[in-house]
Image 1 (cartoon, rainbow, N blue to C red):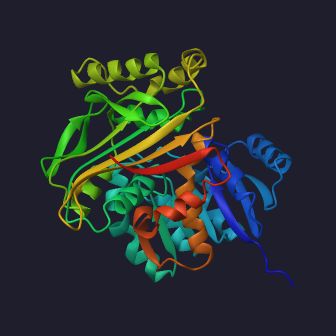
Image 2: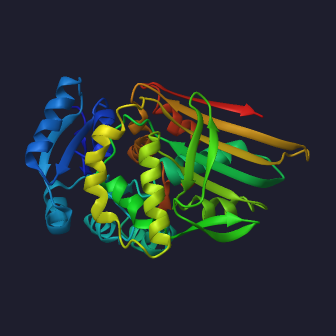
Image 3: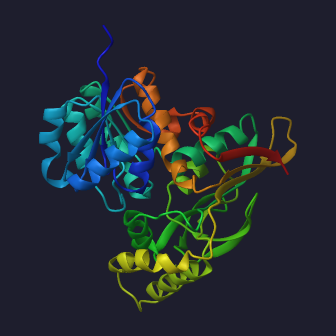
Length: 375
């Protein structure tokens, strides 16, 4: 008799990243994907889409408002693991993760918010171990993919001087409201950066620069709130800087957010989060002249094991609008490790339990290529 399928509850399944993760995991036999959304109609429509795309996993649409009925749903479904794709995680607590732990299920999220990630292991480790489960935060482009890339590039080095990371998605790609709300939460406000070998501050989307991105040319990026500066600066004892920039292909969109950031930094604009829906609507026009290719680049400088000065680069190019799959590749890799029982119980950051090759293996079905070079 075949083993019963493992039930995976995906919160926010009909969002931009939730949809891509659901599509990706639906090609894996032996899973039952519970596709949760506040909208029952959207959840059913997603099931129809996945079925038409050749899904082999079992699919179950479920209307779910995690703020009201998560515990009841967990009791009813008894999932093996819960994946939270909802966001934004800026200012969020650990209520969802705690409820999942209490239910006896594993937990993974795509959080990129610095404060949330910084406190996650300490806040949840004892509870997770006591319940015999594993909870994993930040299984996304940052800090998991970025962190695994840096670990690979500087393996065996004597010292690391600088780390520069940049992400620039394709302008034509859909951007969810949660992503825009996350950006709006810190534009014009202090964000953590690593300068001169210690933690410092920049101003979100005010401090900006250009970054050469293989396959894309020069892209303009701006200071972004991530946990990478603090985590990588300390992890690798970086003597210089750790920078993380994000940019938009559309010059109009980039200028719009930078303008809001400058106004807010000068006290001329309060919380811009209510503008997020308008920004989404405006993108119907502003993205018309953009393309379907985006990318990510990580450049490290330092001294290798023999003391030689080195500069190495890892780059990712996502074409044909496959960029939105990138943030969920670490999530899928983390789930596969849980399925085979290859992660210790307790609370972890995705970057601490994953390897770069595990994340890149998930990219194989898509128009996503990566490359490592010595510059």
